[in-house]
Picture 1 (cartoon, helix red, strand yellow):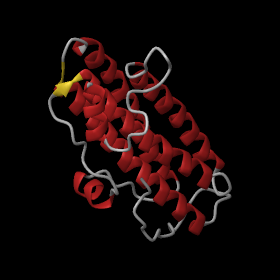
Picture 2 (cartoon, one colour):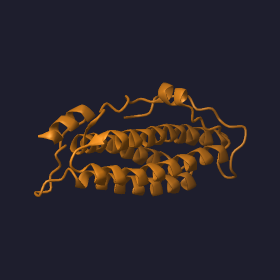
Picture 3 (tube, rainbow, N blue to C red):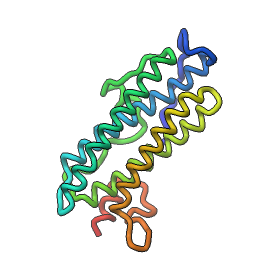
Picture 4 (tube, helix red, strand yellow):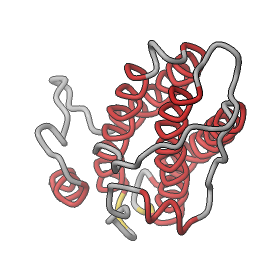
Length: 189
């Protein structure tokens, strides 16, 4: 989902070679990514605690390294915001107020239901990350490089999730689905 529109404010200083107004735009993009990845880390931990079923242990153990990696990404984003002269906001209230997506909608459920819902979550996160990559090409290739590295890791985690949802013919159980609840229901069949 696209980030909520916020008017970025230019920092009073930034890194050499970037104009303050361009830095303000990049800071706004990074804050959106920071919010999305903070939310992802919490969602992954929620799934870790609420997954059940025959493949519980495999999924349960697959998620903790993802949580750790996403938390490192969050830290990198926050530090880049500060480097550019901004002030990263990592409070729960700000995240909820600024986000354009709903809370993760699946509680206690079997592995396929959670993995199908995570397929939708990862798709949205990666699409938005790729949009941020495109938007940082001109104003800040350093930020773009960081986002590219993060997108690579996120895409690998998405592959780990999708490997559980792929049929022998190479299709996904979640094919054509755009929301978590429908994905979870479809994966149970």
